Amino acid sequence: MPGVGRLVVLVHSLVRPGVPVRRIAPHEHDAVARLSVEAYAHDHELTDSYRASVADVATRAREHEVWVAQDRVTGDLLGTVATPRPGAHISPLGRDGELDFRLLAVAPQARRRGVGALLTRFAVELARERGLRRVVMSSGPAMTGAHRLYESLGFTRLPERETRVVDGATLLAFGLDLDRAAAPWKARTSDDDPGLP
Image (cartoon, rainbow, N blue to C red; front, side):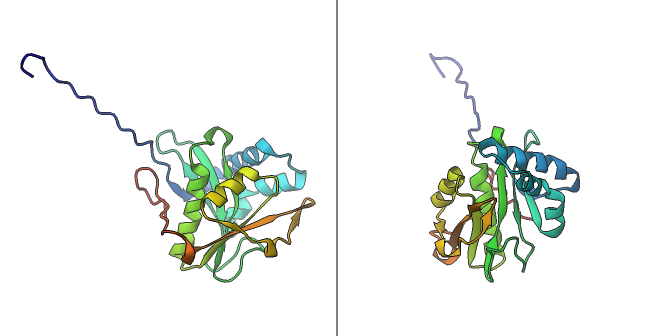
């Protein structure tokens, strides 16, 4: 620039690295089991039976679908969620026309990165892809952070379906009617990666 000198423009991307969601690989079962137990034990005391259930990723992956959110840059596994295979259910809560998901877990060191919301939206998009009308899940009464997340995404309580008791606590039920959701959700990452198979 005349009288000023050379203009140098530095460009820096403010878009955070992508976090795709994909099916778990068999060699990741143990790592996802550790992640899940750490996530659930971080805020709550787990009974031995519930800890064993949370850690049984291999059985879930064999009988249902287990998904992981992975940092594209570091390769770290950040979170996980389990869904049923098409036409099936993963919990007693699920009914015809619904997708029920279970055991959404975010690694303690990955919290506050939107991973829980990403995995929830992924389950919603999966239900849409399968032509289902509602997404449902159960949550322990002490998991208030998860309840706030679900409610912020449009889920509402289903008190008439709160009949299941685990370790002495009645589980809360939440549902999202897809035909009444404000707008179609896409399970997109920050770089528009759908994460679907």
